Image: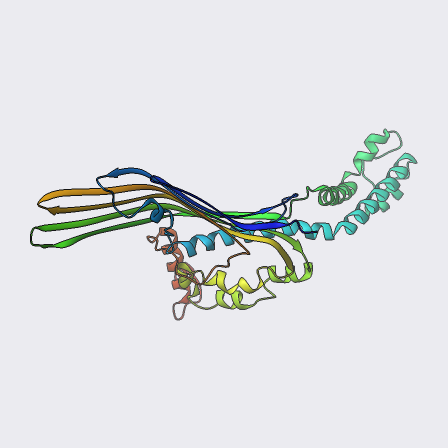
Length: 358
């Protein structure tokens, strides 16, 4: 039974130096639903003159950072996929539970039979149980049971290892099916404008925005079809990423865009059931606006705001095809490009050293 949900409920705090707007939903016990949530808040931390850049309410209502948001979302999505793969691999182990129990039973009975043969001093029969074609040289009637048992360690060690691996599968701690991943990145905006002089009026404007943007993705994952999931992990369900990887020079475009990720979106959740999914975006930082004008006498007005924004929506927001933020070339990337270029040169039949040191 789904718990009753009420909302949206809007709460507003509006003061000269602080503004907050919150839209939320409420549910009754047991609080097991993922619900939308939105909050925008700003605080006036400093002001000179009459202030600039609008009211504190305007500062709270601004959504900055749309330029870097796609890249941060892409990073969060990749981390979610990695954690999802780790969690669902345990599901494959549980699907093999019966095989593990059968393995433990079979190997335990085999060790018990071997132990009885050692007690009876039937060294040939003990070797046959362990699939050994010889009797250990130091095994004999005059030795103790423990010593004789240890002489066959080449035969019983594989059996013990099989039991250990099966026990690890059965006793492996059950990870909760709820998974989440977060990625964050900075956003910096600078703007300076100087208006042309008109008569005795000179004016200029400065704006600075410094934010940290974080994206959190979460959901509850269960295995619906383990065979389909494994096929997707092996690249059999979607050949497009594989075809793209073998395309000449495709790696170059991969440096500047997320095309590899975009091509795999269709089968990332193949064989899986996703529920209670959500996407949360946080924006935290400062905003500064200053205006300067000279009309008979100089006038300087400025305002500084602390800014917080949070939006949680239902469902996973999938990455879009976009260009990655520019990064200075690295030695690793240059070496990779040179090595691939040498291999693709016309008439290349191997490495440079191989062809010239024959």
